[in-house]
Length: 269
Image (cartoon, rainbow, N blue to C red):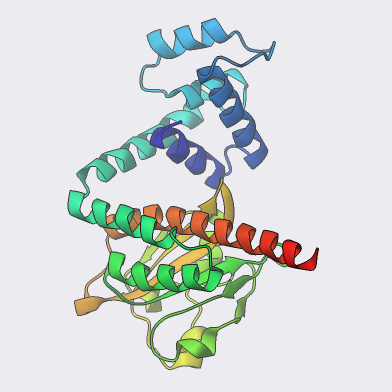
């Protein structure tokens, strides 16, 4: 499964064109198809591969599977493919030095299974990746749908620990619900901005970038950076880099949580 599949699937799900269940079913079928393990009777494997090879060459295999299963029409698929292809081109144009930095940082944050260390490293390097003045990681409470501040950085960061944002509130809440990144050049002109956090810390947010954090295609929270240094604005390159970084960070968090859970069970036994 390549980057095209991940981008396409995430776009279709976030736009409400397909459901999470449909995406998981299509991805599983695609994986089985590629590994030649599929046995579903409702789709002819040979015919599907032939279509993917001879027809609609711009449609990736995941797109073909979604079409064959009737989860999406070609009219709905084509504009999303165009958006996906644009993002792939942008990824290829990223500075190799910046991309290498993000990959290197990914190794660093995945080198420990201590949850607090992982969260602290994520916050430290999120600022570096985007040249931001401060950052905040908010984890999703699956039971309430609230976003919970974990280890924010910047002035008066301690005042934000464990603060909860109701579902859908603020830019972060919008990002969590829509699972799309958001760039805001001037928060005063964005009605989604939640000013209560600035009121609590005394820090004035002027610009921000917020991206969803997903692990194994499941949303676990959002990562937000504010006020790019030198009073510059965050860019789409920053968004792409932070999105790549957030995926690595989400895996590190899930691994740390799993390790701590296993360790706690062993201590009780």
